[in-house]
Amino acid sequence: MLRLSVRLQCPARWLASLVILTTLLLGGCSESQQEVIYNKTIDFARSAAGLTLKQANTGDVTMSYLEREGSGPAVLLLHGFSANKETWLTFAAALPQNYHLIIPDLAGHGETPAPLNQDYNLIRQAERLRQLMSTTGVSQFHIAGNSMGGAISAIYASRYPQQILSLTLIDAAGVESPQPSEYMQALAEGKNPLIATDEESFEYRWNFVMSEPPLLPWPLRPVVVRKTLARENINREIFADMLATREELEAGDFEQQLSEKVTMPTLIIWGENDRVLDVSAAQVFKEKLPQAQVKIYPGIGHLPMVEIPDETAELYSRFIATAE
Image (cartoon, rainbow, N blue to C red; front, side):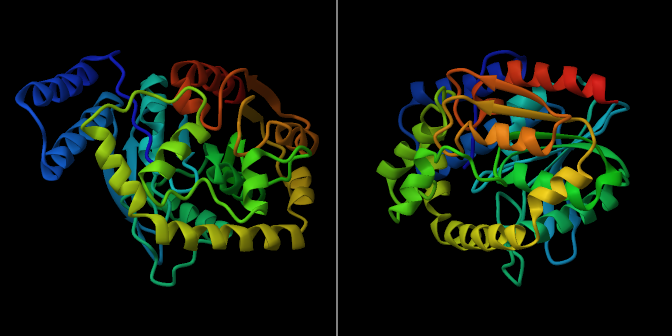
């Protein structure tokens, strides 16, 4: 799901808000006008974080990604299911300016199209990312992922540990929690709250994944709703491949691979109120990764880096400083 927070903490965001307020004063917007305002706001937010849009061939798909080159630590940030690279914008803006940031749209998400073979297996997604990092020329880096992106980060770290300086798991998929989440219970009943099919289910999902959702004012909100609903079919395909990957990982004893191969510094971040992936999963990761530091945020849901970006970025920066 696209996450966009309009926060008034830098000139670029003030300017984006001014565009919105001017439009409100001038009257209603057509859908095309809403799209223009939305795109300008995204551009402002990217600029505020010092990020540039780029593309790279990763074998079976041309991957879109944001990059901010810097002399400091190289960091790869991975979004979750049905999300995109813009999930990280406010978090990225709060990180030290010398960080070399690489923030891709995974295949079938955001501005990266579906691969011709329509393969969304998480192991294949990790392989595409390996090609992306080869293209950027970055041989060693820190990796952090949220939800599905957390699972992909863990897969990458277990398969290519020599490349990974540190691993950060933010409300990550990949292990089974002792306490079933509200989301897992819904799946057992044949429902998937993460796939919106109409405006009502969009609003439910928006509040389901976050306890403290960011401001998403009109005319941005209608655009996000339209983009989200347009993803219904591809989301179902990606989710089916996620479930197939889970079975593949279980057959390959993924948790044992974590324990044996993921020895780099690790940080586990979780929102205590996560309704998607229960907070009890953090302890499972900790048992497999005893070197990990664990931070649980009270009152926060599935997306800490969106709900409290400044606080999460500060924690992550401190962790990176000790992992270097």
